[in-house]
Length: 534
Ligand SMILES: [Ca+2]
Ligand SMILES: [Ca+2]
Ligand SMILES: [Ca+2]
Ligand SMILES: [Ca+2]
Image 1 (cartoon, protein in one colour):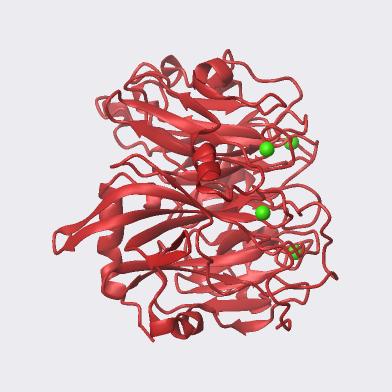
Image 2 (tube, helix red, strand yellow):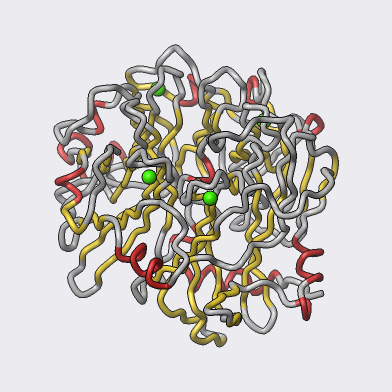
């Protein structure tokens, strides 16, 4: 079998970054845009634990649909939930028109899988392009806001670099879902609430933004409305001697969902609460779903490579300015230091209705905790109490071991994915799955990737295999993200969005890539052939 070579991974990421791809986001390439950190909804008609378990194929199937992006730009795909309430999940990608300097979000609506090339072309051209103004603030993130106004339609959150007076259209946009689809091209401000951070309230030093992490938190107070957070930071004014030793402070403006729609008159200062911390520019919330089983979504909040706070959902709302260090426990490991971020969402891996949790002992070792009352009480992570453990000696901070893949086979539990960079003659990527199961995983778990790669004809690591008119060929495409899209085609199995770039050339100075593509890999309801549960 091929062995993955660690040394070549860093240049790969560097070159992706040079292209402006947010592969190395505040999180990691897999699922940094909402899907992986959101509570995973059970597909209609699927039951929790007890129904038949299926085992997924360990490797990603070829793409069913490929959508071309614009050359020179990365695309950030995100599953955004069912915006129009037709039973099909919807998805969005970012885009940028280099000639006109227009950044935009392209929202496409789910529906029956397009089988013919003409249908795929129609999907590619469909939906709505929500455009910012010329030379606007760059888009930082797109993702699920959840259902902020509780009307049954999913809402979409777009954030850009804040402070309107530096570049136009800064701030955040909340696009409320509804039965009427958006079609064609429009200014985003015409169809979204534009939530601004007024520069006069923060000074230029307060106009820093810092995250492309998902900002939809789920329903943290269980009032039926999903909640979200907007984040900026404030550097000291170094021209002011009195401030020169001040720390950078971060402000997380927490909006509890409400029936009344927010309008563009609302600013970040109208948030219900503002969580503050001394933190640098990588401060982020990490939505975890409901891991304590009390019906309220929980999250962690913190700084990459530093400390994170544990913020369990609570019926008692936060209000006013809340100092994180005073209000929340710091996540810490029982025996020793652990890496940060120390936790990530796992989805509901055993399908018991309570979300489960991944915790990181090191960058190469992750532990699975099944959600339960009292989990993470006091912020303590006790690896001895973990149900199952996964290791990969070649993993690095940018390749976290596992992320939720949605319910790929529609059997009622969340499956997990790993995305690996690998190196054969060219860089390629491997996407592998660990099947969720009502029978809980226990003890040391093998990652399926090595065996699966070895089983491939020729032992080649996986690159994106594209099937076209019965002709299968492998391209030198590098998959640089994979994220749960929800169930785009309504068949009860969650679907995956990947992005790839064609590798044009590689030498010691770096690598160059062609236009990005976004790919849909439909899930397979009922799994493949049923296989014994581990
Ligand atoms: Ca829909
Ligand atoms: Ca709420
Ligand atoms: Ca569970
Ligand atoms: Ca599906």
